[in-house]
Image (cartoon, helix red, strand yellow):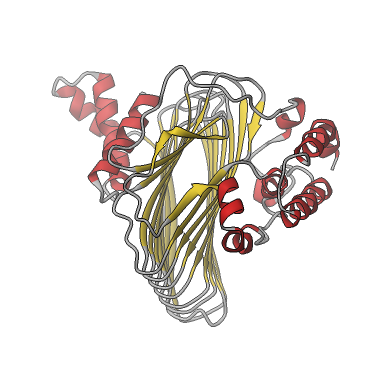
Length: 429
């Protein structure tokens, strides 16, 4: 509670100023309720199991403000042949966005416009309560609900191109943005989304983003999250996935930026025969970098399956946290859950805390988990050096081989090439 009290001045000021923005009464009431809950809950501390290895106390020391709208000096390109929505410092940029390939019956718009034009459709999703006790930053996001995306894909619709959501932050210090994204794939719909957060210069800022994915029966939804913000930034994200019968969801998280990055992913299986395949990759090469991946898979229905594969490469004095938990309820028969986390340390000062977990209340299940932390294979390095390969090139070959197991799961070559280019542009690996 004391942490919030030190932040209360600038939070209260920002919240009061936000009341002057024209918005529906139901949204204003929701924001006020969420703000009160955040003040009561307070910032998480390391005394809490869910935040044991991630310290956010430094956020108390900065009075963050909303960003000023500016046009960036350097334009970041979007994925070729994609449908794109671009946001600069939390504000939608119509001139940089492209929706020409969007099917006419698909709703894709900035969240603020969707609230105006499709209020009855947006409202039930936006007002769904998130778990703020575990994830208090969702309270803060809901209180300030910034610009974001509303995507609604109707029944039987196949979106022909990936939808690229680009959040670009430019040269301003001590600002905070609250993107809120709602993705809805109705029955038998198919869609691929790439959500990317990046910056063009070194400065201190804070991104607090919430993304909600709703996969209705027989929907196929692929979601890529690329976080390559500058290593001076803070990025805290909460992604929540709701799955109905026979739905298929693939998630792929890539983290190679930020001073501190926290990625919370929650999967809820509400009905039988749903599947979710989760992949993750984090690449840390700065002394002060810290990434924390917390995944919770809620098997509440029978005959559902989930797979989880996360890999990390850490250099210097960087730190990573991985916590993957599968919860199988009583009655969730024929649950099939697999999870693994593998880490490669390039220095003796890098640190990983990994904890795959299973909590099972049903006998008729098949669940496995595992984790590894290790150094580069010295024999393999010696083999390459003995054949004339320079040390830096040999290290690159071995690290690329380590992450290939994750990368080859990206079936679309254009997405795979784009992600590889973005990772190489940011990381030297």
